[in-house]
Length: 258
Image 1 (cartoon, helix red, strand yellow):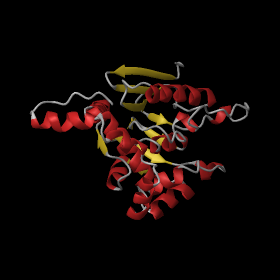
Image 2: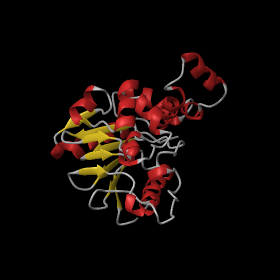
Image 3: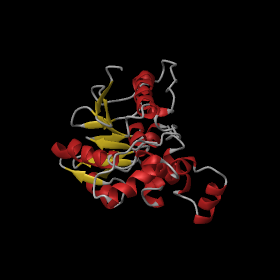
């Protein structure tokens, strides 16, 4: 793994830290290193969830490293920007632990995660329009799925900044905690996810991605078209038998992931 991206395995949880002083900006090489970390999460059945954070206490990520804009290296790696924004087949949850300012492409990366837990001094803003740039197309539905259309457009058009309290109130992030408690809170959520049946979590993430923003009629049409492959794996699996059995026997289930 690159010096700019550090990984640590903690049981079923993969912790990924973006460590690129001074502002955790991402160039193409760093994006590819993040991609390798998400490859590890995706391909290892022993891993069930990831926590993504930034080094330091001031900035989660300032996004694209503008100083690298003329180097001609635009290979972000598998999964697109930061290895995640176009990784549509990743059916394991990712928790963003926002340790500080979450800016531009850094905010876009956080939006591609399933959850955001933020330190109470963090802030969120998109600077692209103020720099003559645009966000990635996938950022639009992700942002509008979490805040109102008017707030989203104001953030996109003007770079409006949200503080942590506003982000919580608007439903942008799951919760805000003191900075000293950030990783503890993220790890507690990760452990609770890891305690659930892995096939079920994977299936539910796929179902949410497919049906989360469509009508019930369209959701059932996706099922009938055979798109809910994860749900099919759950039905008749060993874990689907183990869960009810463990409940009846008043013990913790032992998941096999099959």
